[in-house]
Image 1: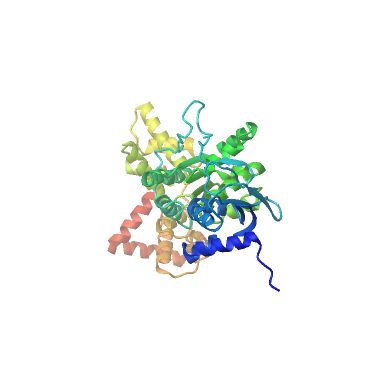
Image 2: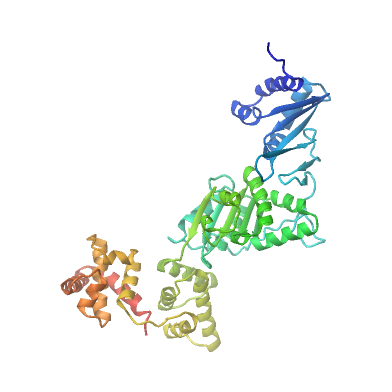
Length: 480
């Protein structure tokens, strides 16, 4: 004997017949098949939906269809209420009920933390100064950081390209979240600001916010102290593009991690863009909740490494262009050679040289730059060594130092090896045997042959001679 459907099931099945004729098959399968009817109390039908996001999506996109369908099936005074399943952070799911007539925008709704969200009302902005207009949301972006003055090199090409893609289509790429990581002074914050500035330029209606992890934590602490955590969460869920700087400082901050986890989920599920910066890759973050770490790994993680010589040179030239400064090429090359740690120190060295020249009314020349570098970096004046020659030659050709010490006979490696041997003989006091030992244990006859080959090519090959002259200048510019 077949069991008769319960009243709520019968009513909902009738509703589904109407809904199915008014939505696409995919939409019906995604948004209506998972719904379970819970009870029918008079004219009020209660349905269970699998998440807060699911509930909000129905209310935003299908509220009109649901209202008309219920009135048709149950009657003019029909109402809809939701039973929303919400993750409680422990094993299993703990459902709670939102007693909400469908389509009422002034409803009290609970978010994933079970705190009320006042939709349809003003959002309290934690960035405002008391007395100012609350909805005047400042992006907190620095306008001077743009893609135009972010110099591209091999060290940052992927991150810059991904940042451009995100800025042009926030929330619409697979790069969500976009995690930019790298050491101090390599351009993480610059790139993050550049993304935000371009979003504001291309998508004027988008609400963009840049916030440091420290400020986020302080705001959360203040909201907890003032019993306004719901307002804090509500504000951040309103943002279209959220950029959080230095998320490594969330480590060991369990309550901050929990609140950020909920905000992250809401933004991501609603197609909002999240950009994060960190001083290390997600896999190396310690004392961060696994759930949050897994979300950091959802999108794309891009590494910013130390810039190579060409990129350092381009950064200095860009800085001089922006500031309207002209400096002798040999001075710029000297700075690019000696400051190989990060961009911030590189620009700081340039500023120091300019300041010294201005204060002493001296011309900015190579001796002045060398004098300044004594106080700025260690070993600014260095004795020429075989290792140093190998480093500069390999840097010029973009190959690893290990390659010239290996047994490979690739043409470009052989040429770099011969040039490095040539300069080792010409500029150091090392014996032929000692030079050969530095190049993988080769004998003195190989060194002699390399030097003769370089001399011959310099006489017959203009491009080769230019390369050798350029390398020699780079080697000597770093010594007195």
